[in-house]
Length: 337
Image (cartoon, rainbow, N blue to C red; front, side, top):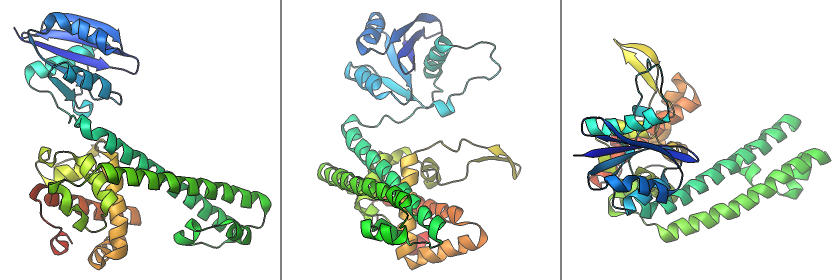
């Protein structure tokens, strides 16, 4: 008799439910987030246990890794695609755990990707780097706005990035304003040091795999962005079409349409936010340094706004990168733009 398990995972506890091949409930219990206790709950059913489904929450690493190390077949559920019937009168953590097991039993489980544990740490290192880069950008823009608000002069980005103490005194002689900008400059300098440190460590530990080496031929993508895209993408074969990959990268519209009419918005945050950031970064570099991309951007910008135009470039780059990674071929500017 096959047994199917579901675990509804929370920040400090997990609800385990087990069902048989007919959907009958065999066992259900709430545990604190301790791997040993959860394994004890599974132990009496290990001989018949087919698989255990864990919901993809922010803290699933420890549980999935521990279950897999114990030799259990683990499935990761994509919660965005596992909605239950909204008309249910009553639902709780136990019914949610049973539903996870039921989806596996019925063969309708929307599975998420379990990223290889060996590569996860370097990927998270680059995620931290991207976070620090965004913080640095926010501080630079803050200084730029502060100068513009008080002097009417709009400094270029490179000038703002290079502000030193003397330059701050020149633009903002008022002591309090100068102190505010100097505080940002000091933090930016510290962030630069940490970003450089993280980049060096990521380059030391990670190398582009054979199937990803041509990523650096894509317009706007350098070594760090190529590593980020490779590590965030994982197995490119899990995407059947370029549109699926671009959607995962948050580079397409999020809307529901029927009979050529818009019926509502979809889940805008579905997908990988780090890939979304990486391709937008690549789009900015591509527009700056590649004439065909710049012409495409300007045509889009003439019909809409700059944000939508950059996202259109990012969409093009994501689709092109799909073929570059899947087929192991260099980027073709003419075909892409």
